[in-house]
Image (cartoon, rainbow, N blue to C red):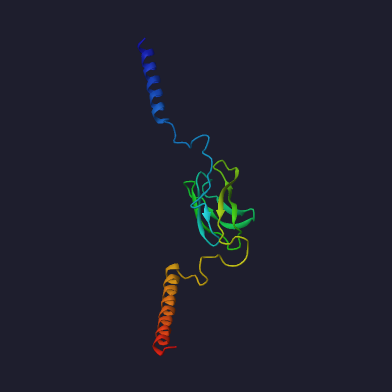
Length: 173
């Protein structure tokens, strides 16, 4: 009986030791979180820069960016070891105003291809096409300067009229 209890104690100690040593490994979450793709600003003008970023992508892989529906390549970014990427892209001047999509293409943590899109609004200054945007003045001068110039011109005209009237009254014509 004593031998049995020693064997039982030994078995119990081994199980305890195995239980402590075989603590759960810090594995990734299953299922892995889905990749994301976003932009720093959704209302942008041609020529503006915008930051495209995402997380939960395959570390070390490349994510490419295209502007749709035109299919314009905006560049790419390498995913960091934390599964995140971030890149600044420039919207080409040739892009027409309206709704567009910035598409992120890459590989998720499982190694599967992923294509995600985020919608952006490309702003335009011209309605009806052609030419520069109307800003309120021809020379792009602030409105307060135009008002001062107009008041000055009106004052000059009034002074000239007053002088002419004085001369005509003084000469008796």
